Length: 329
Image 1: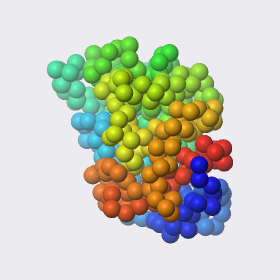
Image 2: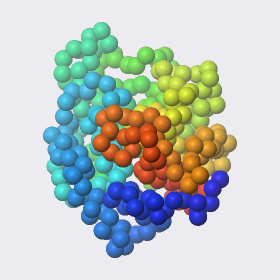
Image 3: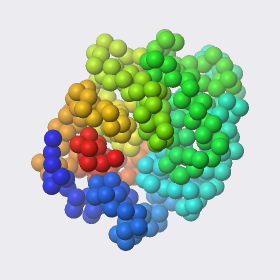
């Protein structure tokens, strides 16, 4: 494993405002109250691309969902804002948060506009509903925004956590979506739903070390160990899975590493270390990482290309390594 003085800190600090901001917080351990951190955050909030994301999400939830994997989906853009460090009270954020909270379902999770065809078990009409491949991510974002103590958010967390089974989380949807589920056996775990739930639980102090989190983490690590033979719900962990990719949208190596590295009790697990070693070996001689697969919806961002090292990806990779070393919470 690399050591701290091999992290390309100066190169990261020369990047765009959101890279500098998160580098100072996540790799250097600086405080939100530090002058340089405040200045970087101010420039991030003033950046036109960040402002556009906020403005576009102001009519939450936006268009009817066609594919959860689409990197331009509003809930993926929402989680990216959360990963940047946006908070309630930042310009434009309270409007988004209010619109999300206004669509709390009877069960608890927050709803999106969906249209599931009759051929796939739905009604074929536009309706409000949620699925376990979107609901945890919306709640994760609300936790990161700082509104986790809202009763509606706590109710959503409780309901979603309660869906766990011995082998992680299944493919589950709200009652409005009827019999729809993904292409897999009912008894199988859904790898993506399990990843999304672990991402959420890592943000909730009282659930981070819970039996539910442990069951989910063991499920993903076991799937990694059996990656050649087990592919529940057609989620593979082969060559495409191992390509370095940001932002965190779907089921891939960087996303899984980012989530699993949040759990301290996993940091000596040989399966996690094996996954991290695959990532680590892709660094160049200066400790920088280059994106290997691009989400075209994010082509205007610095990580939306494969020609040069990406500061955002490099930051994410080093954050994983520092967590696993126990130098970062």
